[in-house]
Length: 243
Ligand code: BJW
Ligand code: ZN
Image (cartoon, rainbow, N blue to C red; front, side, top):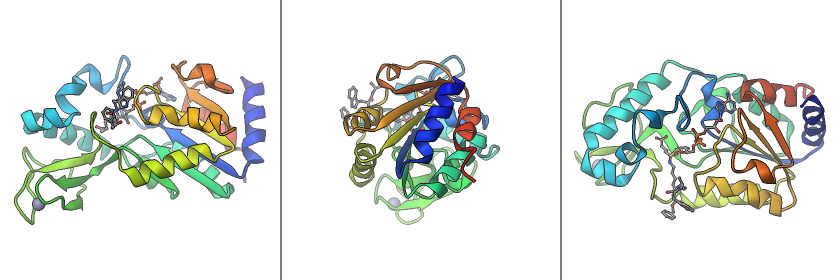
């Protein structure tokens, strides 16, 4: 793997257009559970019970209980060496885009600026009645939080299964995938669409695509590089010469 890391480092450090896609795996070393797998969030919660608009319509208290638990967990952790390595990379690349599926906000906290949060942000809430959007960093929003303007029920401003992603943000993500020279795919199981198709768009656009993950994924087959290990260890190695 050392040869692969050295080769990829050389490619990254001589590229002007780099795009990165991250998933829950990059935050695992901060202490946040991933979604799928042995210790994943979905082990205790069926996705259909907590991350669909139907679930929220049927049992908003259960859904808020899940998101309050996530808020509480998130308030106790911080970004890690993987997040920091991507800030360093951004500072050295002219045309850089970080696309994240994560709603934890840790990339922004670490200092990433050219960032697209395609599944929203856990700290943002939206009124289901008047659409008012607010940032609220409370660790516990209560059982059924209400809008200060119209008393309507608030919801987390995240993208649930069956909901559309923001078309402007998604458009920028596809542009960044199609136009890059290198794309890194970090800590994602690569099964949730449309994020999962971004690496194919990058490859079709002529980019070198590289996966960094603890294990192989359904995407590994079309990767130019598959680096198996922790994001918090591999990413710092890839950017170590950029000082
Ligand atoms: C490490 C590590 C370490 C661990 N270092 N690595 C086309 C075909 C088929 C289905 C669809 C389709 N288009 C749309 C769909 C339906 C659906 C979908 O994709 N379903 C699939 C499951 C098949 N998609 C949607 O509904 C999307 N909407 C949409 O497309 O609208 C239009 C439309 C609607 C309906 C039909 C057709 C079109 C919306 C998707 C929204 C996803 N929302 C969630 C919840 C967000 C809020 C919240 O957080 O609560 O987003 S679900 C969850 O999955 C979350 C994540 O962002 C997302 C991806 O998960 P991720 O990040 O990959 O995590 P894991 O746990 O799966 O993987 C972690 C990885 O890290 C593992 O590989 C580990 O090995 C690795 N790892 N430690 C490196 N230290
Ligand atoms: Zn309202």
